[in-house]
Figure 1 (cartoon, rainbow, N blue to C red):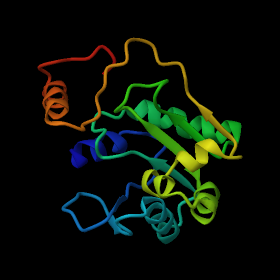
Figure 2 (figure 1 turned 120 degrees about the vertical axis):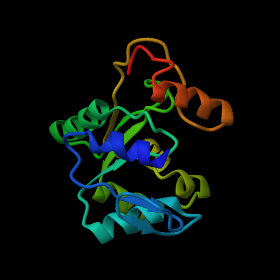
Figure 3 (figure 1 turned 30 degrees about the horizontal axis):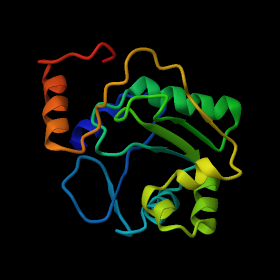
Figure 4 (figure 1 turned 90 degrees about the horizontal axis):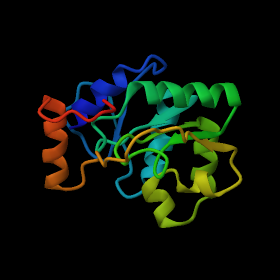
Amino acid sequence: MLERAIERVGQAKLVNEIVVAAPHDIPCSVPIFIGDEKNVLKRYYDCASYYGANIIVRITSDCPLVMPNTIDECVHFREILNMDYVAAIEPNYPDGLDVEVFTYDTLERADAETTKDSDKEHVTPYMRSNSFNHVYLDYWEGNMDKVSVDTIQDLERVRKIWIGKQKPYWL
């Protein structure tokens, strides 16, 4: 699943480098940054610091069908609107097509200021709920099929989509 997500992210035109921020070493086709297992926000911050990232695109590995054009749209809107945080996430986009883009300064501030364990575990809630300049893309058209992989049934549905036995209207 991770390789599928990496492949999709690699199709985005506005992504320069792909790095997996993981809590432990895993076989992977791109560089892996191993960081804090319990504090994912810190893991992201440490990874971005290590690689000198100015703009971070957050895609999770349970979203192997992420759409490259949505990644590019989020990166583009963040740039032209000069936003701290731009996202295509629920409820405006189907679960599993999630894209979040934020600046290094936004990530650094979130890491320094947040105290809630839930913010540290999920990386971006603090960015969405505080005084950051943020916007959500909201022009998804069509029904809201869930395509993230959280259960065996989800995995089976996404596999059918991936191998072409089931084609969603949006892919």
